[in-house]
Image 1 (cartoon, helix red, strand yellow):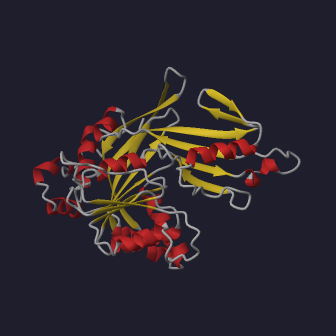
Image 2: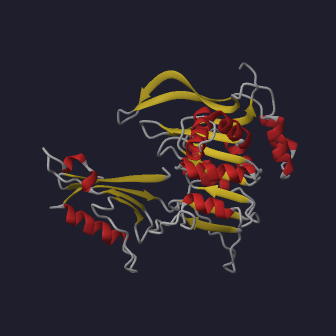
Length: 368
């Protein structure tokens, strides 16, 4: 697995940690533990009080993600329960990174799909990985981004940092032209100067990037700035939560229209004209992750509806089995659905990928 999800749920003064149970006598002990985890020795610990009940931080040593909600925001803190509960979630990521061959061996995609994904990363495309939490979006985005030519000026903007590239030669020099930016939770009340995700994306346009990678978009203003970046011709890679390609376009348009007050259908048209590829993923109950679809977006039709062409899709058979632990395994098969468009072929040609490398994705699909 590309990540271990470690959930620390403080409930009735117990902290459940994988197979080990640790007991705390009160919330103060939980808060003391949090401070120890995030204390980097500078004395600049973020506030976590009843007045500032949300904590987003990282462990000082390994940079694991920590999210905590103060007991004041928990309903169990109120009558008739009067039992304060602080919730803590730690996401621990392995230091080693998976490659496309690992996804193939794990059944997340086929070898043919893997070859296509490695080509897409080299082209000048606007590409997004979507899916629910834990479906493998960030892992796949990193794999795709790793194929970006090393001389390309790439800016990574994340909250928090999960993807990083520190490739050096024998002399210790950076071999990739990359800059890493991370959102800073600042007390600065000036929304125009704080290091928010939206401001960092906007500022990146002044830093002459050739590739902009956004770790995950969450807020309306972030989607609006991403749309600006795409419309100005920047190669853009990123992730956000959505079910599939159509749902992703709808969410993107909704976020833009809600943030800017623009017309939803006009926003949908702009987004559909900007995004080239959407890859949707899913994590099943037994822990398996699948790339459910690799989809081309070809603009909109005369009615303003997105034109979607699915290149590969995971099709369910309707059959189930159970593994040795009794977990349900959903059966299905990967299938190539449509040949790539002329637009996509030309995008690949532009970066020096010859016709013979993409021929298998251009053939008509039989028995559709």
